[in-house]
Length: 55
Image 1 (spheres, rainbow, N blue to C red):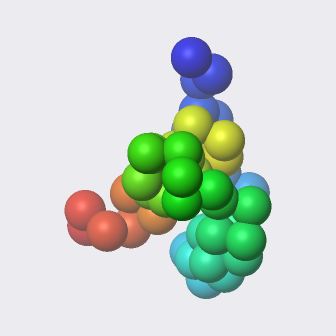
Image 2 (spheres, one colour):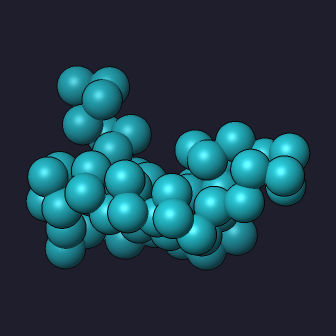
């Protein structure tokens, strides 16, 4: 698993926009949720969303 940097270079707003845009590349038939897909493909951006949702 990739390590996530301590200081992501992306703001919360940028991460939210990227998450929304990434849904275009998400295949519903994969059986994997979009959030799980996003966590796997974009771990640094996912960490920004996760950090800001928990605070």
